[in-house]
Length: 87
Length: 418
Image (cartoon, rainbow over all chains, first blue to last red; front, side):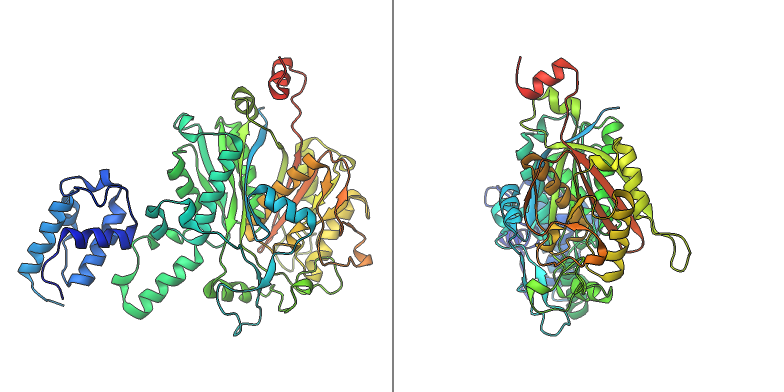
């Protein structure tokens, strides 16, 4: 199971789970998901896919607080370090 | 009271995508029924369906919408786009609450639900799509069309099986009378997947015939059930003043009358409710039976139900007193999609002065119907569309050409003269 979660992982999972938006390949690290066109349900789907692929459990409130790709990538990596290969 | 007029049609049927392709095929009597290709039906008693061919959702819809939509919703979204384009309406130009969406649904997003149930069963709950929360739901077509087009007026869904398609149009008419200026209304159903198939088989009304030409034969002595299909129609319905003020490119006609009734509970000694639905719809339209020039029948394709419908029609119009047709013999029954598609066909029939045929059936004499089995050219003043739903639902809609009336300003705008 992978030990690092990258921005490209996030891009791929967004694409697979919720479909493409125009800006996904651009400089999106600090743009809000909402402005990228991914609403809360898309993030729920994204979180669920990250959890099963990377074997982490993400706290709902922490995910809700991660408004940008940078914040979500950091959150997932923190969990990967804290609870490595739990699954 | 302001009249509700139809200014745009979006059609997706097994016989054609788009209004004019559907209508040309319908007039020509082309059949859209064949052996299922979407899945292998060989292990089921019934294997024929009206499938829509050549619909590629990715061609029409943004990628964001694809993972969250069932096939019926994709077809509905595209049909709504077509209806708006046909009406010359840019929804972003409407005030926020001036437009709404009212659809009907028979069974929701079955194929999407089937895939998620499979994921749940085989892999576990964490593999179920978050979008299952709404993608299966009856109201999802109304919701997705509303979101895509920014139509935030009163939106809803009607669930009364095949009758629901007409009931939705009636609800749209009510909202127009309450002040909504434009409603996208109608229905698209599509559940040609194994889960949808077994649900329909359980209803006991499917034809198990192998030959597409002999499978769905309403009002024929050989009637043995119906063939299901997928698709339907979405209509742009407007307040007549709104349509005239914005110089709508065309007004197909007016939703002039409607009524819904319920059949008595099984075993209760009262007559079925279809006759009363017809009479009330005619009253609502202010028309007498001789002013109806064609009836689009529900056409269940089962002897008891065909008998009940023929009796209701004959009691109102007299035996053989009005031409009756069932163009759904070419598409299969589209459940909630059937009524709106028949209303679209009725409006086109009024426009062109032609009754589309019932294909395949040889009318049994004892039904005493003037069943139109070959395309018939005849001037038409008004049409009656019937639909019945499992559980005792009856619905009837009257459509007629839009008459701008005596108000000169209105008439001039409609006819384009000054």
